[in-house]
Length: 353
Ligand code: PEP
Ligand code: MN
Image (cartoon, rainbow, N blue to C red; front, side, top):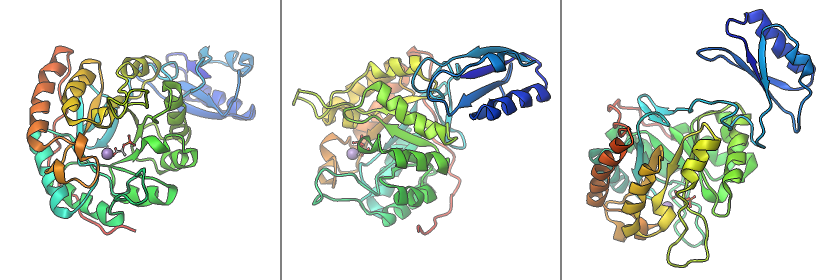
């Protein structure tokens, strides 16, 4: 439930609403806005009797959020949330963000080469997994802590902020020491204890859609992060399982306008996992930007044929540079630009753990 205060409501009136909500046994979240303040009521599992609150001085309106997710919904917050992953690097604003890099961090040479290549092509942030959720326990599992340290070196060399995955609660704290944005992968989208932990850590979160998750499931998972007080969540469409072996996953483009309608959170698209096929990545990235995606997440490897994971869906640096140049006019056609790479600030490299 959302209590919208009158324009010019006094701090004492707002405080009284907060206290009343707390007396009723719920949590109150005051949200000052440009025009007026709203106070969110959270902690309820059903409709709340609003009569006591409606009668308080300074209250303009009480809105019952109809969706099962609350703080994630557009009813809760009509304006778009802009997630800041580093100074000047935003997702969900006017411009489209480009997050690119290899599936896995493999070596210092590989990740620094990838970072330099994607930055030169215009990427906004570097992706790369240090902890990898692999279908087989015998496949390359990632370099772990060492991988995080190599990502910090790549950031120091290029200035690109880092997006990297956390697979469990302990790992989330390690990842948070380095990452600018913590990725929660498709397989962990409904790992609710992990979602709560990254909510409490408070760093931006990139939440990927589970491979058998509905849009509603995705938004409910995001609600776990917001419920812990962290609204810096980027959603990601990465394809869902289908009956058709022609692709690795079925890339659900429609999810982009659906999410924009239902939620104020930004949504980006991952055409690499969404298709699983290198030659399908570029057309689907173009389509995602045309459909309104707030960014794209693309796997790029300096030598895709030698990649330790997901080489078949990775672009090489030349293909990626061409893709970025194609995205600019597509973004411009719908009144958007592409987020610029950040300045190189020389973030220090630190040991992890
Ligand atoms: C990845 O981004 O490399 C990854 C493992 O993605 P997903 O969780 O979408 O499969
Ligand atoms: Mn991958």
